[in-house]
Length: 215
Ligand SMILES: Nc1nc2c(ncn2[C@@H]2O[C@H](COP(=O)(O)OP(=O)(O)OP(=O)(O)O)[C@@H](O)[C@H]2O)c(=O)[nH]1
Ligand SMILES: [Zn+2]
Image (cartoon, rainbow, N blue to C red; front, side, top):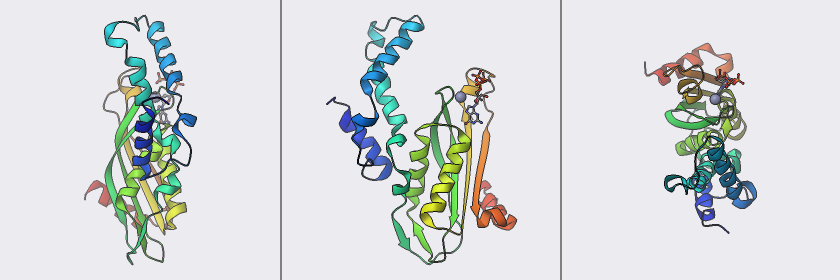
């Protein structure tokens, strides 16, 4: 057992509020393999992986990757299991949830916010607000594309909350477009996914969008 494993358990457990799908961390994250790969990359770019500043870098990167990709070890459906009786049948919206993810094309970060809303089902049951932010994390902490991140959040809410409608808007800057390649810092990508009532009703979509935009 390496020293890092309890940390990984802790990270994954924090993401979902307990449990990591019953699978031990060492089944899903091979820290030693990441370390070896990072060492290879350092050699390949012309660095000396044994110089003072870089000696612990492969190990640090392995731990960072395990944290950034902890969502791969989380069952997102289990994040939304806490629900409360509230008799609320209007929009519930959590906005400006910070998103940190990595694009699966370049393994470079994309960063921004998610706005996540739903209209409870006919039983009026609601979920804990923090669980919506945990759900965003569970999908963001994987190699991702923003479109899939957006629809996965919406689909899991639609399946688990049995709501009348779901709306998810994600607004991010992709570092693969800023610091390399086309080099357009500041360009933002906005994606949305609507389910149920929000698909059918322009008025409901407009209401949610004005809450998101703060009008
Ligand atoms: N649709 C979508 N594209 C993404 C996302 N993240 C990165 N990309 C894009 O993925 C594409 C990969 O394009 P490729 O031509 O295979 O790779 P590349 O030569 O590195 O492309 P450039 O970034 O244009 O230099 C780029 O256009 C990226 O901007 C995302 O979340 N969604
Ligand atoms: Zn990219």
